[in-house]
Length: 587
Figure 1: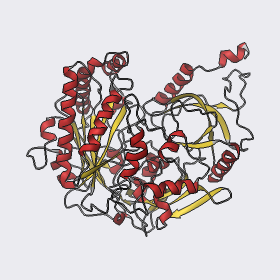
Figure 2 (figure 1 turned 30 degrees about the vertical axis):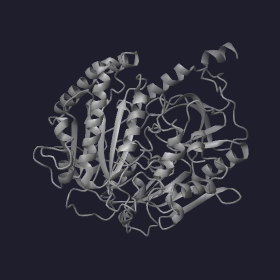
Figure 3 (figure 1 turned 60 degrees about the vertical axis):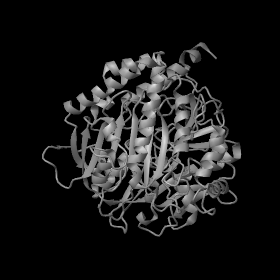
Figure 4 (figure 1 turned 90 degrees about the vertical axis):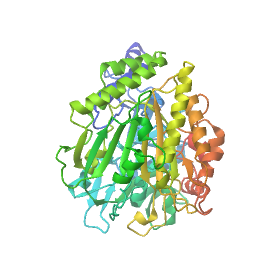
C-alpha cells in the first residue's frame, strides 16, 4: 500500500466515527453510515480507498460500494462490507442469481433498527456477503383509497413514516404502530413489528384494522424465490397458503413489494402520568387504584416505562378522541418527546461512566432519567397530546438513547393482563434489589411494558389462508381465549458487566413462569433472546429446541415451525438469503 493509500485508508475507529456523524446529521431520515466507497476506488482522487476484494462479475447497473454497518445498539459493527443499491425488483432478481452462481449471500438492509443478527452475524466472515440497501431506490408508496378494502402498496425500503404520511393524506391509517417511524416495511414484516394497542372495552371493530402485528395487514406480497431453475419474482395473495411463512420470515426471503390493508384514520389523545407508584400501577388482577389493567380496560392503548430504582413509571395512555380535549396540545407531526431525543449532559455523562466501568451509578442514572422525563414533559407541554394516529404513536427516532433489550411476549387472555404484569414486576424488583444488596448492578435501563392484540384472521378484509406462521402474535387454536400479547422488555447500556447473565436468568424465569394453561412465552424477534451467560443468541437448546417448539405447540402440524422452515428452504434452496445464524435457527 502506498503512503497516499495509507493516508486515506479508513481505520475502524474512523469509519465508525464517520457513521456516528451521519447519525446525528440525518436523525429524521435514518442513520445511514457515512463513506460509501465505490468498488475499485484507489484513493488517487483524494478520497478513501476500497479495502475489500471486489466481487467477480458483479451485475452491471447496480451501484456497489463498501460501507460501514452498525445495528441499533451498536453491538454489531463492521468497518466495511460490500453494499449495493438495487433500483428495481428485477435488479434484486439479478443479484440473487449472481449470488447463487458465485457463492455469495445477499442480505437485505433496511433501517438497521434491530438487535438480532438476522442481517449480519458478529464475528462471521463477510467476504462473501453483499448487503442490498432497500432504502435508496426501493421506496415507492402508492395508496388505493377507493379499494375494498383500502390498501397501500410499498417497496421494501419504504419507511413507516412515508407509508403512514401517504395514508393520512387519503384519510387512512393503521391502528397499531411501532414507536419508530423510520423502520422499513420489509424489516417490520420480517420480525412481525407491532405497537402498544388494544381496543378499549366495548370499542367497536373498524374494518381494515388489526391490533396484531403489521404482518396481519398484508393482502399480498412479492418475493424473490427459486422457481426450479433460477431465482425469479413471485407474487402471493393472502388467500394462498404459501404466503403464511413469508408474512413473518426473519430475513429468510427478500420481499420486493407488499400491499397492506388500511382503515379510516382517527384522532388520538396521549396522556402521560408520572405520579403513580409502581406497586399501584402494576397491581395484580382486580386490584383497586390506577392500575395498568384499568387503563387498558378503559382506553385500550397503554405503555409503561419504568426507570431503574425509581418509584413512579412514565405511563402513556392513548385513547380515541375525535375532537380536541380542552387541555390537550394539538400536534401536527410525530416525535413530540423532544427531551428523550436530546438528552442533557448529566445523562450522557452517566452513560459514559457506566461504559467506563462504574455500573454502581445505576440508581442515580434511573433517578435522573425519571427527573428528565418529568421536567421534559412539563417544559414541552407534552403531558397531554392530541393529533392524528401516527403523530401520537411515533416517538422514537435516530437520536433516542440506544440500549440493549431483552424480554419477549406473554400470550394470554386479556383478563390476565394485570396478573402477568404484577408477577413480572414483583420478580424483577426482587432480583434487582438482591443484586443491589451484593453490590451488583447488571441492569440500568428501563422496563418497558406494552400490550397488543393477536393476528386474528377475522381482521383480514380479503380472503385469507390464515395468520403468519411464526409471528409471535399468532393465535393458538387450542386456546381461543388467548387474545393478547403482553410485551415485557428490559433495557440496559451495552457493555454493562453481568447484563447478559441477568437477561439469561430473566428469560429462563419467563419461559418457565408463563408456561401453563393461562399463558405461553414467545420471543420478540427483533430484540434479545436465547441468552447465554455472556452473549445473546447463543443458547443452543433454546435456538434448536425451545423456539421451534413454541411454534409447534397448539397449532396444526401442517402449519408450524417445521413447515415454515421447509418453505424457506424450498423457496431459497441455495440459501442465498441466509447467514450463519439463520442456518442454525432455520437449518
